[in-house]
Image (cartoon, rainbow, N blue to C red; front, side):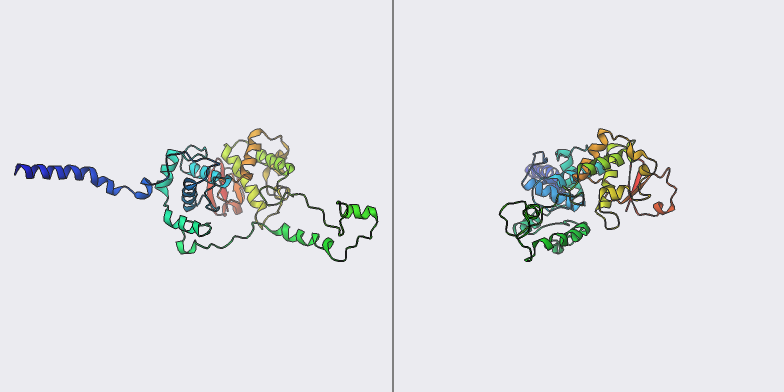
Amino acid sequence: MHMKNILIKSFILISVFIMPLSFVKTDEANAFTRQVIQQGAVGEDVIELQARLQYLGYYNGQIDGVFGWSTYWALRNFQYEFGLPIDGLAGTTTKNKLAKASKYNEYFVKTNLNKGKKFTHYGGVDQSKQVAPNKKAPANNTQTNKEAPKATPKATPNATPKASPKAVREAAPKKGTATPKAAPKKPTAANTPNGFSQNDIRLMANAVHGESRGEPYIGQVAVAAVILNRVNSANFPNTVSGVIFEPGAFTAVADGQIWLTPNESSKKAVIDAINGWDPTGEALYYFNPATATSGWIWGRPQIKQIGKHIFCK
């Protein structure tokens, strides 16, 4: 009898220690390794990081296991929204928060990656629809369509090398070329991440300074992001200057503050936005609720408020 009581007590004690383990979420317990994940990292931890950020809607790029700029800014946006230190580093606190807020089907992700599949909408979408996502069209191909035909006529079979030496030199810089070719075009301030001229960056810094120099830094990045979102939208001009100087678009243009000398914070905010940080959630408009008089702007679908500005679709 005494031995039976000892066995019963032992069983109870063991159960007390073991039972709580059964309630631990395996998704959280097995999340990531102990290393701090930072820009430039590659491997399985980055795959999991991208998948979790994509599950929550912060990362829209390809899950490829490479911690680049898109992953960096997606992580910063997550940290901002969840009240974490915004440093772009996936340390213990950030990884724990990610693990609790998201789900990660490692088998599903890695199986399809091994098959060469690309993910653009992981999480929130039926997994059967994720294995072969539709290719997204370019954000704005207006300029591309306009420019494409221009280079074509110069490469026709009717071109002849019997022109004057001067004409040949102008049409075909390389000596000995039988058929004149169109000279390569310089990058324009269009809608590609690497296509912004120094004038574009300077003008955006002026606009950010004039519109939001009293705002927190993330609010300055947000204004720059709105400008870029408009450049990439079919409903707005497809150049930085066209967007900024569109009639009635920005108060800083109307009152002349666009020409104030921008500070370093404004310049840095523009670079951060160009590199992919969009804390607005792809907003196209913003306004200050304390000073806005337009009933139209109040009717726009609101995304969030950053500083004194409300950002809208």
